[in-house]
Length: 115
Image 1 (cartoon, rainbow, N blue to C red):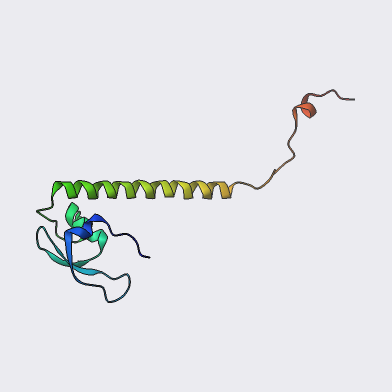
Image 2: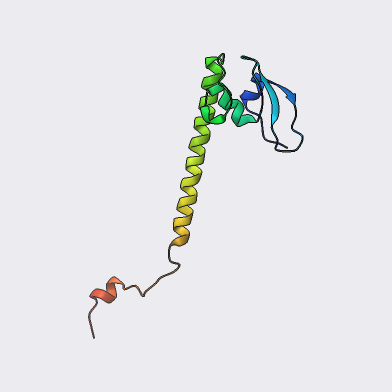
């Protein structure tokens, strides 16, 4: 069972499937008719106008689609940040010394009467 495809896939026509697993698709944008070889991240980048994705910005992307994709990207960033925080905490806990490193005194031993 593969990953569920996001809403960006409903906005493009797939012209050619990848030759191997994990490869990119040749797609055509329904809005601006740009044809390019890419996967989900770069398709989203095309609709959101993300320069770093390396695909020309869609000039006709509907605002509703743009908002939906922005919300998905924000949720993914927050999830990745939370995951990094948990990993950092796990590493910090693992780095703590295991068990008592010296004999700990008790209140009774510290303040008790000497015989």
